[in-house]
Length: 382
Ligand SMILES: Cc1ncc(COP(=O)(O)O)c(C=O)c1O
Image (cartoon, rainbow, N blue to C red):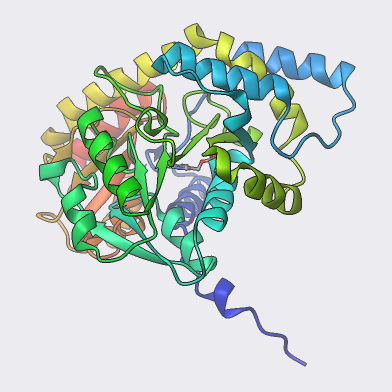
């Protein structure tokens, strides 16, 4: 008898960047040198202090299951991070340690929404939000953002979306790197609170900001869920560790979900991550490099005809409007890979309606690679 794959699983869209990465590696196996501007992760390992703490923990600790909400030492250290970074007094009890921010999405969506609920989110935006929402039986509602509002949601867009149960905001955003100002975050948080909309703020790129202030939704609303991660600023993608700041009345429900879905987040990663907050010097060095990379590409890419770039306030992405060069971003990226040896991600991953005319360039790599990519693109005969 042929058993079926569930409709729920079969209808989940692919994460196109993963397909691009595979195509890029296949070309490398065939001997072509590729510059990777598609990868959305730091090119560096975890900071030295974290690696040392992990080695010490392996020698000392059993590395078993731990508390579903996270080990107390890490929850306290994360709460301290809010005091040090944002001047915010946060009880450690409101911090929940998760399997990356990806694990936090599952917990926050499941604990906030009922089956069929509509959830608003910016397009362009990180594709997994909508794919996870759909897989769980919720309905993603695109807010078609534009350059006027730095591709970020506004109260006006939200009002026009009709009845929604949630709003996902990402600042700095993937794929645009743009941020939400404090006034805008306050306005969104207020609107959401008054209208019974759960605000979920993805703050995974906090720390990677190129000047200017960055506001946490935790400072604007006690009913918002804040999500963050060790993956980006802390350069620890493979350690699969993140956290949430949750409203006190949601804590027990989230704890029960976490116990059943994950038992606990990885113990070794948690023990090591306590040291991450003491590694700022090393990590801020990465941020300086990202900034240098951004400035290099902003100066050089226009010479290659890629002159419609969103200037990112943070993260490590440039979102390029290439609609004057192609109306098929998948094909454009494929040709760029084959003919110029530069991998980038088609905008369709981030914006289903308008992404055929855009692409995302990641500048998380080495500065020499950025210079090489610019050189290749300037010489590319399209
Ligand atoms: C905006 C955004 N949120 C969440 C994630 C997932 O990160 P994590 O490794 O914490 O699961 C990513 C990864 O690229 C991202 O860009």
